[in-house]
Structures are given as C-alpha cells and as structure tokens.
Length: 56
Image (cartoon, rainbow, N blue to C red; front, side):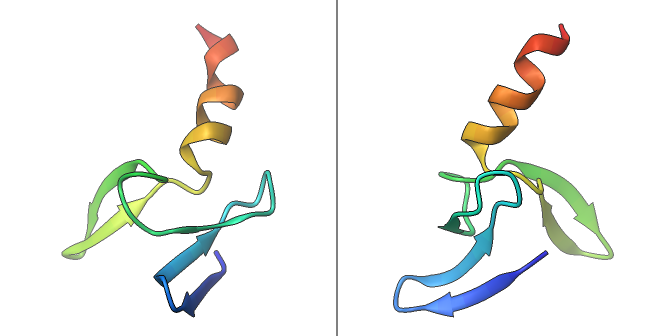
C-alpha cells in the first residue's frame, strides 16, 4: 500500500488504475477495524465495483 501526503491531505494509490485518491469514504470503502485503526479497501471504489460486479 502506497500512501502520500499532498496539499489535499493523505492520499492512497489504487494498484489497479494507478491513480492517487484522497483516503476517505468518497473514494475508498471502509473495511472494518484492526487493532483500533480504520482499514480501507485496496482498490478505489470505481475499480472495486468493476472488478467485483461480474462475480454475482
């Protein structure tokens, strides 16, 4: 997981599309807590939906 800090704040790299997005609920899904720290999905929402849409 690659994270950077920009003028927009904390951003995370989506490994599928290769773009950086702000680390918030607008761009990533929450994936529960681990040791009291919020976990996020690895892929951005757009890539997550594209990847998992066909599995149902």
